[in-house]
Length: 377
Image (cartoon, rainbow, N blue to C red; front, side):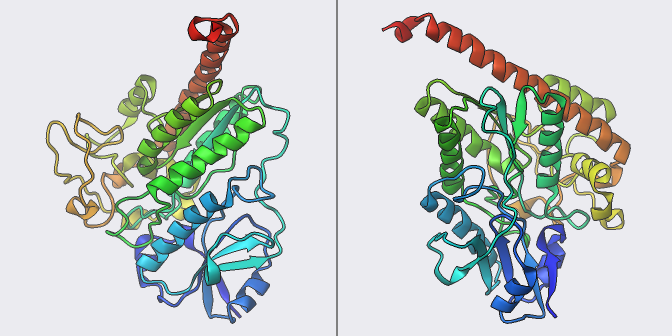
């Protein structure tokens, strides 16, 4: 019988240790029959299921053009091939062609990850949370970014249900540093921008006009900036916004500083903050016996690494210049209680942002309807 394991809960050393002929599968949606999947792959001893892509295809909550989705998925599969895996596949509902050839398996699909009851909520801010599947040192799993941003988005939507609704968290983003440590995927910057531009296009065509793109992964942030700039030009009556991760505004940073135990450099990646949040959200996925603190980032006054990156320089040196384990920071100082406090603060920060997006849209629409400037021409 085939053993089916969850790729996203592995650590990067676990991925490095996998046989390279182990089949790895990225599903679009869920509800597939695992026995039939294993049979279609020849009944291997084991196969890895990666996190499901929750939307983007025909029949999901929001559909994007097949070429945009196809390139996005193809880049993810290529990430696995670059790591040496020889049997990688996208598992899709029947009737969908992503142009992947033998890399696509079609099957009957049950639950497709849809977000219920949004069709008549066009006056809400749509939260679009995107995490990632990437290495987080020896002690944390690959799905850290997704679990955290999912909790923040759900908490925000639950706090202000009359103002915001959330899509399911997308578990894939952009990692330009993926070669250093095993396990990290990369949707590709241009493909990521095209995919999320198409997501906003699709929702705008249905009458939605307020969007907040939430990232749980630093590598997504610059590409989200491009998305909101292009979308705002293309759809002149929407208000689309993003922000650097979470706990990055003045109030959020103040809460970080109030409770943190590590000095600057302790919260870069898989450090005190992310470890604390995971100890609160999913302690079963954290192995504190394997924490290795690494704070030896090559820091200069205008370029250093912490949660809110410091200095005026922007760069992207090789990840393994500064880390031997994949971590930047002091995960050993994390506590579940601080994780709870920081999660609450992150949700509160996003609630404020949702209110501002509504205010920005309302005030701008008032000007437009009054014929302000060129709107009166």
